[in-house]
Amino acid sequence: MAVDVRERESYAVVMRHRADPVAWAEEVLGVTLWHDQADILRALVDNGRVVVRSCFGAGKTFLAAVAVLWFLYCFKPSTVVTTAPTGRQVAEILWREIAGRFRGAKYPLEGTLLTTKLELDKDWFAIGLSTDQPEAFQGFHNRNVLVVVDEASGVPEEIYASVENPLSAGHTRELLIGNPTQQTGTFRDAFKDKGGYKTFHLSAFDTPNFTGEPFPDRLKESLIGRNYVESRRRKWARRWTWVDAQGRPSD
Image (cartoon, rainbow, N blue to C red):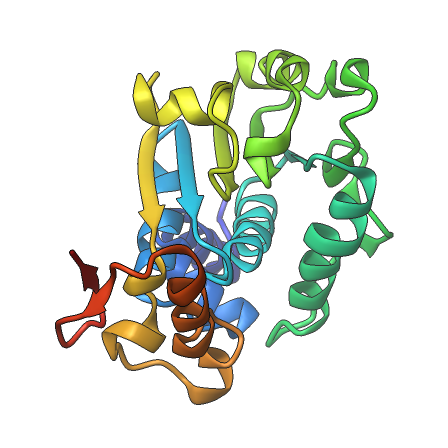
């Protein structure tokens, strides 16, 4: 049976975007990523588990939202499970960002968007779950599964045990992202012992406001800035001195 040319072209586009999430983010969502954000998103193509420790204001929740939408729309059918330490963080931070990227896309995206769910079909959806019910993470198996944990350092250990259930079969990916605020736990151990994770560290001094990387001014305003870092330097680390073109501190 002949295959419609448009179907072949559509399939080719999907396959290209599966392999290049940065292109999908730019071409479909219309967003611009700075280089470390782009590297993290690309890492999800070839790595089953990716973990990111980040400073404040590096755009980590924005990146998590982009990852959610890329995986959901490029892998059919797919289930994307998201969580954070509290229900408020799930709904008002991560899913508000997801909603913003969904509504602001260059092209209308299919699906029914609710407060913490985006559904394309009964077996094709993204959902936000609170951490107060570990059993709620059971049963989310699908051909393609992505688990995203925002503010991952503060998530209870029983949740990490629970999310292994949807990650146990199929084409699966896991993204842990957060500020390194705890000295123990799965998030910390992912960097200490690796555990199969591709690791990233986003420092304030890696962001465009410090490196001079070309980046739209309107977007730079949403990233951590020199004034904030200088105020923290004065409070926390008076021994620091600005010494190089990137603004990196040293003893």
